[in-house]
Length: 268
Image (cartoon, rainbow, N blue to C red):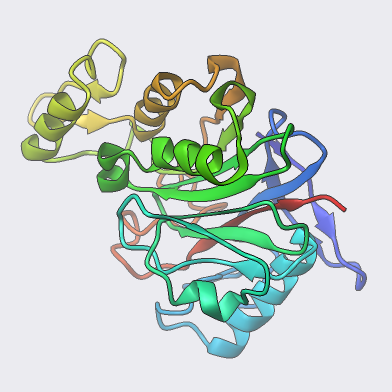
């Protein structure tokens, strides 16, 4: 990932991480916690509205991100599942916000698709051939259930996208260094991904500790099995839990935290 700051008409900088695998035909960004107006502990670019922050500050932060995205932000109500909602002509952000889904997809030129995260993986999926795109939220439950392969299927069913043409960026999320899990979660990954240890998804428990899981590696494996080329998947090393200065982390901050809102839109 590279840092590519967006500067708004008032001269304010909004740091965004971007991936080289996403073509210039699409705008996308993974924000840091800088560039907003929220006070501590939500400082400063908190984009989540349900964690106790001042609603006016959240609204201003979202306005700034929407300006960087070049279109209104459309995000569904996330439930750690595999549903992928299609944003159709005439639908509004309020319409989509009422849907329970962990991914949104469209080929509209006048919307920015977005997902909320604060340790889970924000994924951007684009198809340069058809112009279709998706934003996906993948926590460990959604990963095991196959939310990213579901997005690949949805882009194919709705827009004729071919897996081999897709480009995917997995944004900042909790890394295997910090994602300690219970034995039951590690076993669930071994059942869902029988070669999880060989693939580097599960790291054995350290002395006196618990196993660690690499969520990005798990989703890389699942995307490749769904037909997306390995070289078309960017999984940056950024860990939200390690990097307090740049990222919110629900686990690190024990729930008293802000949220990021990753986005993707058509560049028009």
